[in-house]
Length: 411
Image (tube, rainbow, N blue to C red; front, side, top):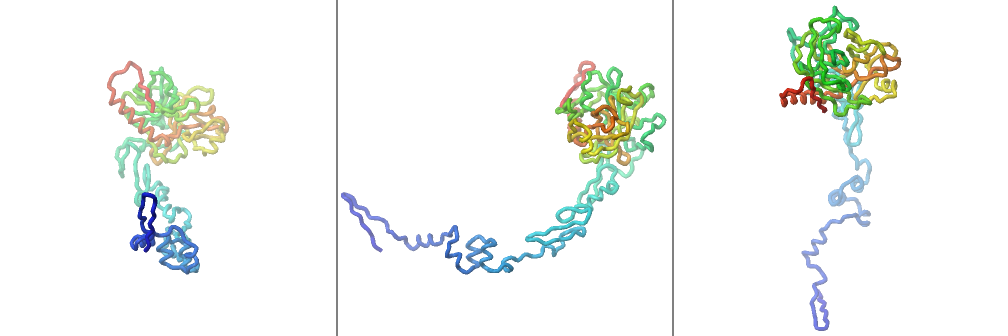
């Protein structure tokens, strides 16, 4: 090794060696390159160099085998027959595709048969059917519980009627329906949900604090001895109700005293969120025709569910996702003024589910027009929350309010 010595005037210094010692030189030689060099690429492919020293991708592997077929070896993913229920398997690179038989779907055609268990007579369930671990699971609406037989049960499930257009000897065939009265004059309807709670329309809550609820009514001109009148304790209206468009046209009423149920006064069940709408029953004491007088007898009408596209094309007014249409195109049958807030119920088996609230329409029974209803399935969670709020409000406030004053809440 040679050393260089530099002399300056008055100063001198000895510089470090130009060359590194053996240990330091070895450390430099072991540092890995971050890119391939030209000379490396012209060498013959080597497995250790191509797929150990460097990231092994298709290009690097191809350099080793220098042959397309040898480079790619992909097993047949269909060997294990992954497609269920007779589905046809097609192998792909690193994966496979299943072509399912009619009625089945899913990546492996696994969805179909189980869902059809509920489609066939609702899986044998009286109310709700679902699939749990490959088996049918039945569940009940509020107020019901699973049982093979309920002797002497008095509930909506006990109702049976053979003719939807007839009244049977004055017997009330819509025991969920009621009248909202002000100064003994009916102005809206509603649906019984439980012994304290009534479901109705938000636009019916614009009246005074002196309204009451009349249950078990069939003929307003006759005292039949089974009617019951309840004072209203509180109401709760949807906070986002729009009076111009009737968006979120829903409200709950809490009665001051509990309802005594009978074969003439019964609650309707709340549907699950995905309860399917079909033909429904509408009832009320509204006008018997556009511009005509209100009915003194409880009227009931079976109305078919209208396809949403048809519904929207029938009007220039907005039909929101929380509304639906029901009724007839040319037949002069429809809900009318005075029926607002009343029930649109759907019967499944022997149980009635409230599926709509009479909300609005363009006149009554006009050709090409339909009745528009608040879609209850869109508000099931809101209803449960509203009932809880009204119940908590009652427990938290036992103070007497001024005579006739109704507590008004928004949720």
